[in-house]
Length: 100
Image 1 (tube, one colour):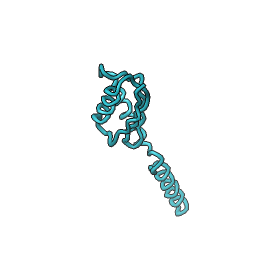
Image 2 (cartoon, rainbow, N blue to C red):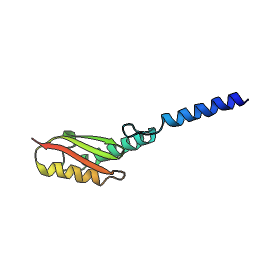
Image 3 (tube, helix red, strand yellow):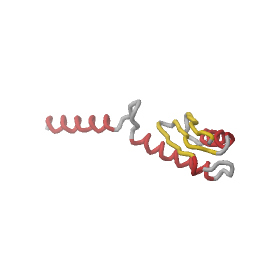
């Protein structure tokens, strides 16, 4: 019985460490949160008439949103970053959008 309890404890510990986050890897919960943030940022851009959402890529890692792509004017790039900052759960925005 002690051996079985030890095996269960070891398996539980392994499962917990496999789901934890590191500086370069998200936990399962963080991944889901980031997916939701990305979707909300994309929706905010799609609903804004001044931003062409199809020209901007959105990636999220641990709440930090990175925007990339090419737009026609600097106003669109700035507006995209503003929209991203307004989404709940966003901790930072890195705006790598370039004007073509």
